[in-house]
Image 1 (tube, one colour):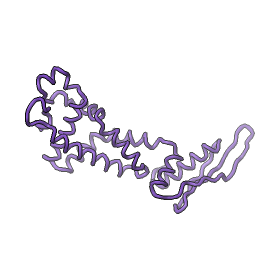
Image 2 (cartoon, one colour):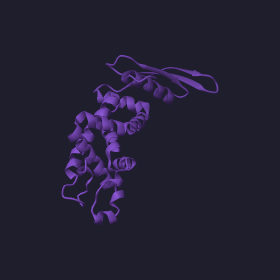
Image 3 (tube, one colour):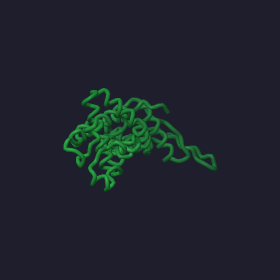
Image 4 (cartoon, rainbow, N blue to C red):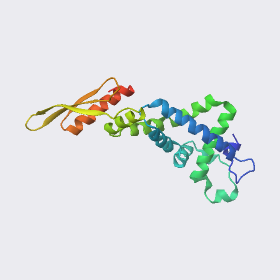
Length: 206
C-alpha cells in the first residue's frame, strides 16, 4: 500500500505501474456495473457514463473525500508546487491504491471497494441518463436491438373546448407489447406512450 501512495518524485519504487493496473480494473468494474444496471442504455451512453465516473476530476474528488492528500508521499519540489492538491496526483494515487488492493486482496475485494465508493455516483449518472426524452430513448433502444423504429398512431382526439386530449399508441414491429397514453398535446401523448413502452421493455416499474 505504501508504494501505491508514493509519487514518482519521492522514491524510485513509485506508484505508476500500480496506477496502470488500477485504471484497468476500475474501468472494467464500472463498465460491468453500468452494463448490468440498465439494459436500455446504448453503447455510446454507456461509454459516456463511464467517462463521467472515471475521469481525472471525478477521481480527484473521491480521493479528496478519502483524504488521500494527507498520506501521499511526494518529493520536496513537488510538495512546494502544490502536488497534494493536484488532480493528476490525487487521481493517480487512487487508481494505484485500487491496483494494490487487487494484488493484495484479489478481484472480489476490489470489486466490493469500487462498488461501495462509486455506488452513489453510478446511481446519479444513470438517473440523469434515464431523464432523456422518452421518444429518443425508445428509438435508441430499438436501434440497439436492430429493430424497426417505433410507430406512433393517434387513436383519438377529444376537444373539451378549453383543452384537447390526445390518445396515442406506440408499437415496434417484432416486439410484444405496446405503449398507450393520453396527453393534452400530441407530443405529450407520444412521449407518455413511449415512456410506458420503454418501461415495459426494460422492466422498470411505471
